[in-house]
Image 1 (tube, rainbow, N blue to C red):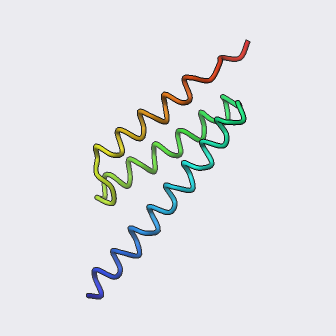
Image 2 (image 1 turned 60 degrees about the vertical axis):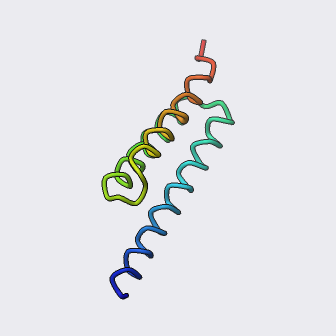
Length: 80
């Protein structure tokens, strides 16, 4: 019981961090700052990979999210 409670707390913390990073990335994309969005994307991708590696989220879910977030970044118009 103590073990599963520890794991639940750890998983909840990791998932919360993922949501926070993703939310800040999407706000950056919405503002149109492609350079800042690229840096934010790297943070989100790294966190997703770590979460998938440790089993917090499924690896397919991490891959799907990375793909969709990258697609959003690519939709931004390149700076002239």
